[in-house]
Length: 91
Image 1 (tube, rainbow, N blue to C red):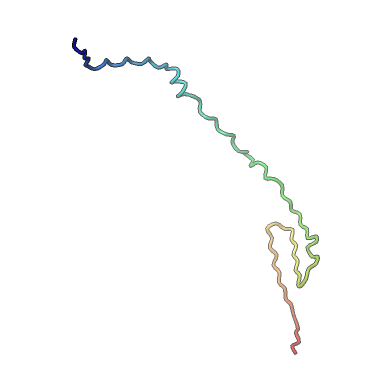
Image 2: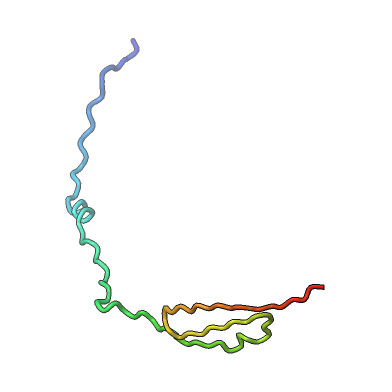
């Protein structure tokens, strides 16, 4: 007997099963995100403001020429000028 030989291409593979449409629908649909709350129409609470004005202990152990200014007005400006006369004797 002679040797048997086989030649030729194999057949095409079969088609896969159909996909379920409900899986595709649940993956691509949904509700959008919810926006955040709006701001307070009156601006909210700005906190507290301490307008105390104290110079306690500021003048202790001072040396030289001391100038003090105290003003309780908001956004105020204090202008100061100091003139010193020193008489020296040179020998």
